[in-house]
Length: 371
Image 1: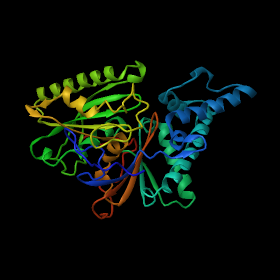
Image 2: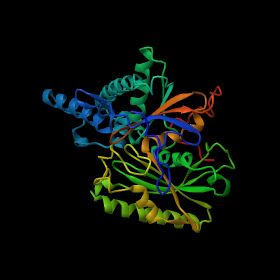
Image 3: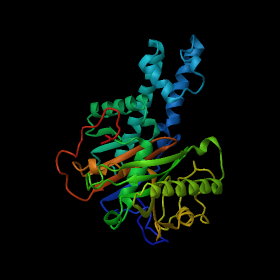
Image 4: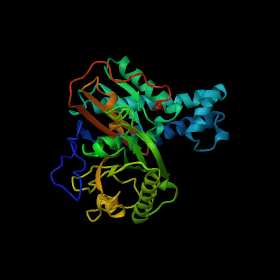
């Protein structure tokens, strides 16, 4: 399915647009089915845990589960520690799950590359919470090796920023050009199936005008999955987070733009409603009677004495946009976000590739350098 093309304008927007100021979104939120359901479910965070649980179950039947002391659902950090410092059998078990997951991820990517919008893709950026772990990095690297060993001319790279921050930094690429003439920061929201984050993004155009040095000044994370709120409670909590972030930034004399960029799961309509794909959010966010954009603007109608502009797009699109300055050596590229589900988006740069990409040497931990 192609990205939703803006056909009408809401109070702000358009939202979920195919044409953005610096890039074309050729697809997002593709929902590919196979015999077991949605293909993306094979490459979600829970899919990895299912691989691990299955392996542990087999071992427990014939002997002893090496991870018995870790409990039923060890955290990513616990699994990372087992890979780096655990006993050989513990590390081998975790790595076996990594291998299974990498094989599944390679299967998913092959299917995506058969889609029209993805067929010319040269590079895939992988983000999402699972990426920010050693086991995630190994799974991504292994999937890339699998695909390249089969002759697929595709490169898999981890998202440069911390995934939590990439979902905010990417909002800068949703902003209209007038933002950059008078302001040094903007407000961003990243809504996910487990967390909601709101923060202030410093544009830092004095360091580079292409936003390659943009970074999160401050943010607040709320893990709604732990509390199970309803939709209205979740929106109210988001409003409080936004107001506190704006107040703190203005107190520090940041010139905060009257703009809020929002990344949200699902297929985003041009009027700010969500057609589908938001099933992991608390409550019914796809109701025709609910408009998230209008709710956000009502909670923060003005910033710095000016009417607030709100622009929303799919969360995978926004996380992918954080990589835009570093993707100038290719024409077609894409993003996969591995988290509660598998987010996806593909892009085509408006300009011809410029040869070697800007600062393509990534820090080993995938994080943006702080200068």
